[in-house]
Length: 494
Ligand code: NAD
Image 1: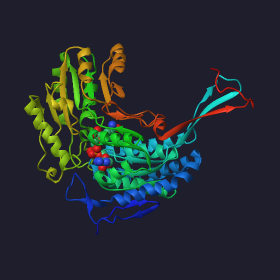
Image 2: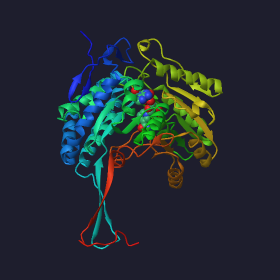
Image 3: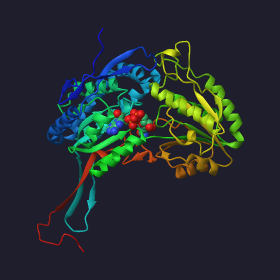
Image 4: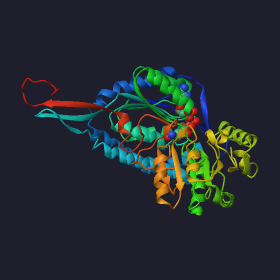
């Protein structure tokens, strides 16, 4: 049977690339299985995608937002009917356990549903004037062509949380997914096509970031860029976009802490550390890669955590009972293994794991043991840099204040958890945690469609994604002054 060849979707048509070179899409849990191949599209093809989006913009902009929203509701329905298929593709392509994939698809569905509902609102505001018989109001209008660049670790939810608000706001889109997850992107685009989106409104361009990604960042007809991915790439895109004076939104790395105080429910906190640290193989921007413990409970907590880690089932994410799948590819696996070596060399105490898994089927995938370091200190690289794998570092501190200082001692600021029964400490933590998202007595991960999502410090640039806050990015606010005096007068009282 010949392999499925993915295509670009430009101006309402599925088109192959002129470049004969392709990228094989390999199942990281079974590396002898190639799912499909995707094109290494050319700059010219990326320009064609931008041109199609530009041409489609005037008509899409004029389409009333509740009508645009109907297409999103249609996509929601189709996605629901294809949810099981999408989740399976996600697990095969990215490696996460099927339960996590189902959860991600459900999250995408919730975002689609919520955002489509916003098509009936997209509210501006009414503002009192200082002049009599004058009315001020605002309307929200689309920006134009937007480039959406996404990573591999949430290849269904992240594209949806960009595409849905971009479209309902009246923008037209060029969507460039990660090279490692083109299959999910292909299926998402197919769903919008089946939903009846007019030609050119959503265009998919597959290929390398350094080729087609760059082209859709630098193209003069692109008026906004929303990027999720690594800091190096995001900051370079921000620099290029800001030089052109266009809007750029970047959501990037994280180094998220779980802080556990001496009055915490330790069982609950251990579970939070496991879900946050090892769920989705630690390949989450919100992964809890640091556990900050108050000294008095540290030994007991570490013992409980090690015991709980023994019950983590690792394997092919499609098999029932598996909690943790493989690293997404060989490069990512080697990066994680390098960080583990670094941790040992820096003087952290390796308590558990630390190796690539071998034997009993593991040889066919990029599996790594869940890994735990203790006595890590803030200045160590494993405590500062995003590892993006199943590696958790325990840091210890005497007081609540010291715990907070450690939690905040990283360049990133996405998510943080506090486990404590003390309401005063909980509320203080909300005030002082330097992050975009705080979880009290729950893991660092997750987020609901109707709530804003994003980070502070080096994690995030620009307005939040999701919730209604997302429209701060995808719409322009126009302010309208209506003078119904019919008289000549000064435009201001001053
Ligand atoms: P990456 O930066 O390598 O790639 C992200 C996207 O950028 C891909 O589509 C890639 O092809 C594209 N790209 C690469 N070079 C480019 C260039 N020169 N011009 C334009 N586009 C280019 O990131 P990744 O490895 O796919 O994803 C992992 C990273 O994403 C982690 O750092 C993780 O924390 C972050 N992430 C952040 C969030 C968040 O919301 N904060 C969510 C998920 C993932």
